[in-house]
Image 1 (tube, helix red, strand yellow):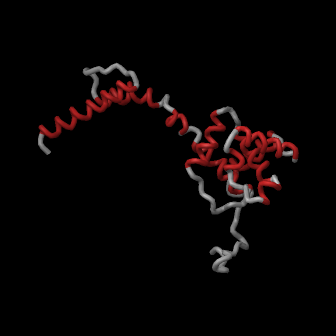
Image 2: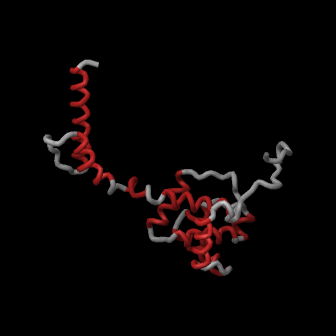
Image 3: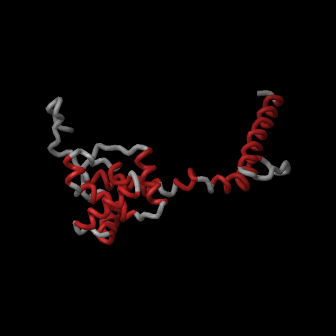
Length: 180
């Protein structure tokens, strides 16, 4: 690669970086190097964005989804980004992990939801009203927030043993075979 091409690439990169800084209302300083601009000026602004803030909630949302899988015995279910977004939205609006666990337990104990096939986590966390309804259901059945907090701590300490979901006895209706 020739020096002219390299200088052109650097110039173009600085122009893009300048546009990004302008977007975040950061004063451009020609005396700073590109790494200094990225680390000292741009990174703190990026940390204020919602995408960066959600990173702290992602492990919690994944843990709550895993609890749902175990409580409702859905071992082969995988989370989608939408599932995690719904959980993160509730956590950011002030609900605790224990309250979401309480909502999941409320869903698992709701005859209407289970009999009609409404067992997906969506039916517990799609809105604050839905979560409140599931929390109320769990509360009526004796699953208080404190009791759910204890179950959450039990899961955190020993996730392998908590409501272990297994495929024991499952037979595929179309093939007649069990899972190996």
